Image (tube, rainbow over all chains, first blue to last red):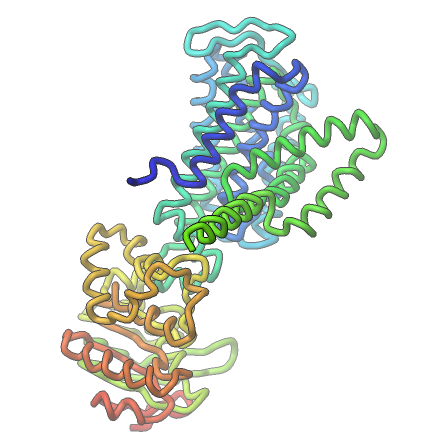
Amino acid sequence: MQKILNFKESIILICFISLMSSWFILPDWSLNIVCLACCNGLVVLGLLVLMRAGLISFGHGLYYCLGGYTVAIAYNFLNVKDAFILLSIAIIFGGLLSYLLGFFVRKFRGIFFAMMNLALSMILFGIIVKSVSLGSTDGFGIKELTYFGYKSSEQIRLHIVSYFFIISVTFICIFLVSKYIKSPIGKMVLAIKDNEIRANYLGINVSKQIHNIYLISGVLASLGGALMVILVGHVTPEDTAYWTKSGEFVFVAILSGIIHVIAPLIGSLFFEFIRTFALYLFPNTWQMTIGIILILGIIYLPEGIGSIFNKIKNIKNAFRSKKSL
Amino acid sequence: MLKVENISVSIGNIKILSNISLNVKKFTSIIGRNGAGKTTLIKSIMKILDIDYGNVEFNKIKISNFNTYAMTSFGIGYMPEDRRLIPNLTVKENILLPLWSKRKNNENSALENILNFIPEVKSFLHSDAYQLSGGQQKLVALARAMIVGKKLLLLDEPFEGVAPALAERLVELIIGLNKLELITLITESDETYSKLINADIIKLERGRIVS
């Protein structure tokens, strides 16, 4: 009998079901952290797509910020109140900007690619800070939203519709990225990472492929930003486009690794909870706690959190082969 | 027909090839010692290296005006000296990769043809490429070049660094290529195997053709 789901897909499904059902168990304060981790996880998922080609961006806050501001602008100036339409607008703008900038950044590799993105994100930061109509450094916010026409009212506990909406969008993206990675186009990227000259003589248009993955990662990051505004209700340039936010995404991306598509979400959840507890327990030295965790992560899980799944798979296979003997 | 017209190629400031012209109609072997410019010549045909002046034509198309990735569209396959498989992909994926980039749908029949030609590959088709021995990798690299190289095959030192038994098998396979009416350009450091496969011989020395 053919398996309906493979190992990776079943892990995604298990995580989806457990996160969905945790709305009924988790305390009020942690629901927002889970959702925020999903928003940030989408940006890290975008970085994972880039890292598979051996590229890293120190400026993906650019698209995070763009997605957030697109939602806030569409809400306040165009009077769009539906979360789904707001997300669609953010995807279009994120896609458009990453497509246009892609022509420029696809020429760069390594540290130059990373720094070029950082420079672009700081330009956006500068523009927003100087724009009084967009709230300058204070940013601006949105109020009540509708979800496919259903109105969710503000409560202390995050509304079940908002929670399910954010979790579902995140998992749809994770599932689509896992399909993309397994597709021939997704595998071609590994050839580019390994050796660009070889990829070229095997008929792969390297610039075009890099442009494509940049577009995908840009769309994912803007989607993350858009969801964040839908969740938090407020966007500021300092929490989105500033270089420290982009650095945070890179931090989680390194912690997560590129082995499994669910790893960015787990990495983000881990990071958000550690930060919350570290801030609570050691308010003055919380950065040190985060730094120690990264060092431990690099030493003991050099391939990232995703490598845990490979270890589980290996144990499972070893157990199976032992059984068949 | 592959027509190389008066090409000169430099790497940095050093001139590697000067005024090379050759016509390849069938099986041809370029013989030269280390540093003679054999690999540079093949890389220039593939446009991996830029040509200072001169041009390369294949079936009356000036291929030197195109990018490297376009070569597979003209039916040109290239097997580099050092095999260069993608370690994290399976053997099957490595072989099919050039077809994916062209988005062709006849994957299975193309793979079937290649496996009939090199049946040894069948036994490790689903292994990861990094698990293979050097000789097995050479066979896979040949299969990968052949899957797109329907008209012209450029094989850079196919017999270099392989055990005599495998070299003999490669000779058999390359003689088999002759029957497929493919134009094949091979490089070798001496004439040992080129004579066995009955190729036209062009000798290269210090970046110039000597005979």
